[in-house]
Image (cartoon, rainbow, N blue to C red; front, side, top):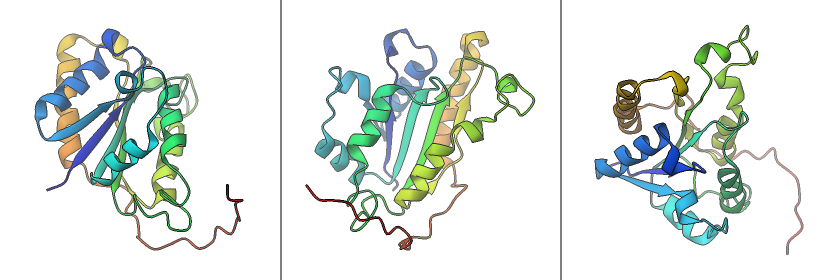
Length: 195
């Protein structure tokens, strides 16, 4: 059975409508592990060894967050830097995440039409989230289609509740849009100093 881990990162979960409900739905499922980064690390000091151990015990890893300035919240960026180390996640000996499945789930205050080539931002959500696709590729993981909910400020409670059920279905059943080969990429020749 696939073991799924959701890393939720919302800087103010207590006042969130969408991410709080998504997180509660994950908790209530009883079959998916949830790690709330801001609750776990209120001081911002991430335990890299504990987080890597958690990742190693799961097959499917989802980063859940509100889109913040066209990216993820700062603690999730810090988490990536603390966890995704050369020799563990990538590079020589870095095979801990190889052939796991990775995805993102995020909400936006802006509506979906804003994220079109002719929209307010002139970029699609797929373009905005390319760094996460590249993270999957660089670490040898399969990549799921992003789960998104846009225009959350204008949604009523029933639409938000429906999105939580859709999210749970996505977590359990989504298939990768990019399938990793599992082979090493030997093109990287950068030599890093040790110590």
